[in-house]
Length: 478
Image 1 (cartoon, one colour):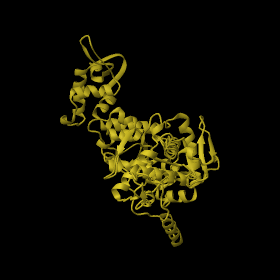
Image 2: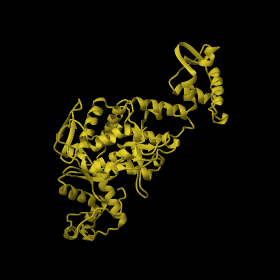
Image 3: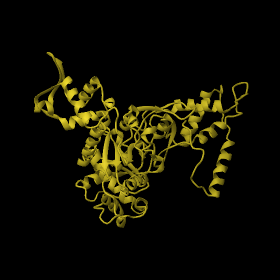
Image 4: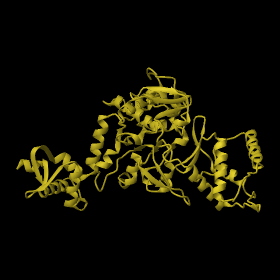
């Protein structure tokens, strides 16, 4: 079991608390019977029967938690509930000699561990049906991305419910607060509509739990170098669309800590105002979490949990970090930069705009997301935003001296060749002229590997060692 928070921010009225206390006290008088040997395994079998009877069989153990189906979604069973059920076995007689069961923390933990083994279902949520679980049903999509509202059902394997209603497509968003936020952020941009569309697809990837199942999963980076550009309001809108149980706020700098990574289990969206260091962004764990590969994490003093992250990652920053070792293609494939270029004039700003949209137009936001979901599921990849592609290339070239040299000083064409030795000489001349420290430049072998990683064709035969189809501009000028 993962450790649960000891505090609960929900508020209960006094009458409800008294009713709950009465139910617990009444249940405690029910003495289990039929124990033969009193082992932890035998008690776990009895507890399993109790759980399945109380939930009509709709209970599983997966990714470190016990879940039961509660009308609209699968929700975790609180650890204290399990322990209270097991408490009933303390002092119960078993076997021919009427020996007494004596329970303590260690035995209770052992019983829970055996219960988890009995009720474990691998990949239960990883195989969930793509769709959006909202308050009035489950929005399913056909192969063409057309939505249909279905009744809630346990086979949909959803862990969260969006607190919005979907009543079919909406013709337009003109005059809405939602339109004011989105168009205000991108007003004047040539690809403003493409940016608005990609935001709906990002929100859809989170609501669907589909971000890691795309052909090319990506972490989205909101880049806004000026103040008051709207990116914080957009992130607030994305977070508010989903229930709190579906959202985390873990920066990439914490991805190397399994105590933080465990908090991504079952989450649909992870956001942070900190993109983190280049070391964090280029790490293997960053790539694994973005693409949904299996990772292992745990809370302190607890067993490790293997799981596949499903969260769509969205980060915001004012400046993009450089990459001392170069931004390799694996990193680039997993990133999309969305530019927030405009400083919104004070006369256009609305105080707490995202909060107002969530309070007044949540159903409209869901319709906007459903539109994005249809496009996303048809293609199984995010739409192309011209400025995003350019921003990523500029980032790579500015952060990676080799990428910068390739962009500025290399020609591409059939019949061209470039030896490794000559290419490295030209590269060093250019890099030093651009102000790079000689101590920061890669060695020749690393340089060659980086060119191969950039997709250049390498040949080593017949006395030639170098690259085909490319040439440095200085070499051509000679």
